[in-house]
Length: 208
Length: 144
Image (cartoon, rainbow over all chains, first blue to last red; front, side, top):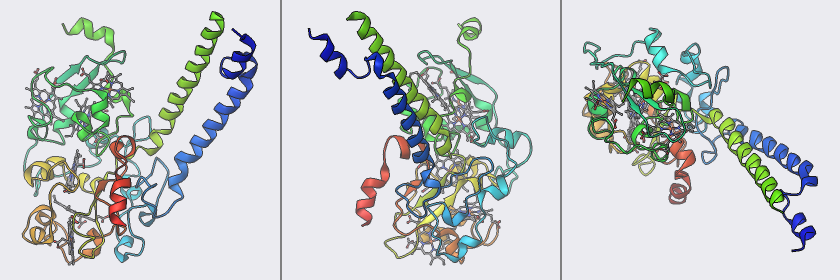
């Protein structure tokens, strides 16, 4: 075995090349930072745009969000999101926390066309324990049933029977199960700990 | 030699870990499920109108999901409801509210038909759109 030669082709194993690796990593971080902020400055290029892109403090005018046509008169009348949602509570990743927004009474969306109907909110949780090494998932019915009704989920998305739905993370990312809403209208799957929030040990004690 | 290989896998893992970390770090910047604008363009482009942009954030401040997705029967699928102007004027879908009573009426074409011409039906900024199915590519070809 000609050690000397194989050592130098195996770039990541060569101890003396750690500076190169560090440089590569640095460049990678830099490019990823510019790439992910690029849609901000591009106008009307919908292939690259991801629509409204606003975290706390950012304000993107409607006509620059990449999906609205700036040549449309009505664009000036449409309300920019930041205007009405400026003070809405956000979670620790900067995404609007709609559950808190509703619970705090900042908004009171109608429950029917005229607002006379009642929501049938139920308050019980289901723990998903097939989470590999992640904390267990606590599915709470309450924050869902203040927005939605049973038949939005049962039985089309979830059979209402504990443990009878083969939910996986891949399916969620692809827009099934929880992903029907999460990542589209409700908070996205990147917010791991809003779902994976049940410590593994305590579950073993409380649930059999 | 064995020590070397082990050493290399540490580097590999460190690099992999960093990649994942960078990925996760850059992800939340694009997380905007909170707005959820739906572009609806089954027929509009072909009929010479701008595509429709439906802002979820604006409506969910005023109505719970249940009102549209149960009472009015909107399916959870962008473009899946085959909405037409005839149905709207008939009081279905958007027309259940945009009738001059609950909200402004259908005369305000530009308020709904506000999308960039050629934009395909999709839900803006969704995880699926970015991660799994780059929906644009295919639809884009059709649009050209």
